[in-house]
Image (cartoon, rainbow, N blue to C red):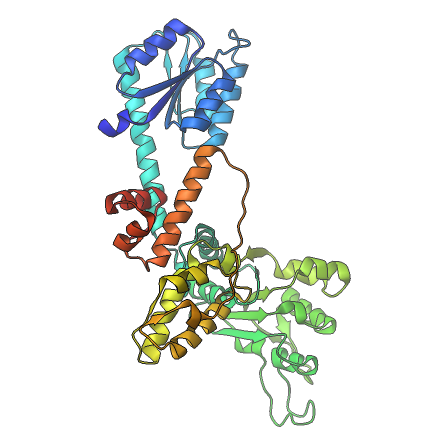
Length: 453
């Protein structure tokens, strides 16, 4: 129970004598007290207690329960995992049950036996501990939807879990993101996680094919349909039957072809160019673009009805500059890959890592990959230096919403740990040196943030 002594327990009680009695009964915990809802929420924000005991009757109307229920709602909204134990009067069981229905963990009637209260509080701590450990273990499991992606960034891991959930369905998915953020990698991961994995994954870049050829590329053509059509040729849609079709840069598709694509999506049959036969095709459509399609709809460049057909699920992929630690993590991986490819054993020097971390990477992962490939070829020594990288100094994108002091400190610690692990290429001892902490301390921090060694 030593660890539990260090964790705060919040006691919300306006009766000073009862407040002291509860605190005395729970002397094995580090208790903080509050006499009303406002001061209770201040303590919640300051200490983030795992367990709270509270009376429903609080000032300014201690004879009613409205203030208590309001406080319960605020505590649960601040942290749904907080275990709130409601202390009620002997004949007030209906309000106690209402509180449990509203998110309270348990209730106990007054007057209470100290041993019983201790038992309930200890059980609440155990439950909180188990839930926290369960969350941590889930966080350590890299989603299968991340196949092909290398990331430790929390928002990217959440995105991967979204891909994993969506993959099991047959909905159309739209991947939004800047060029080079990994849209095709995610589309392939979606396909590999879907029931269609045995089928083909077929990708076509709508911006790379001239408008007059795009229709025949997508829908195929019959022999003699136009000059040079020497034989009947299935299109990309037909080729992807039973699998997944990725329409990359869908925002560049011409309007007349958008109408034909919409008809296919509605009826799931197509006609080849120059043909009259309707061909049924079973395919899942995933599209991708760096454009703002909603603005395109307003400007008349993109059909609104097609947009809503394609955007049943929208996945917004963050740029590399917004992914904590990922630039250094990917850089190490690219050095290993290209070093093996070109028969060189290289590592990144500290000044190179600093340059990589401070650059904004407008071309995202594709630009980083090309940069490391060039540096691997051109480096004269066993270390790739900032000069080999050849990047202009650039402050990375920073920002975020204002937080409370505790949340700000935790967010800063998590970012520092992620950045140190990325720079150290996952070597815990080196990351601990970079952070100026011991290895056990870093392991504790990694455990808290759900990070794998």
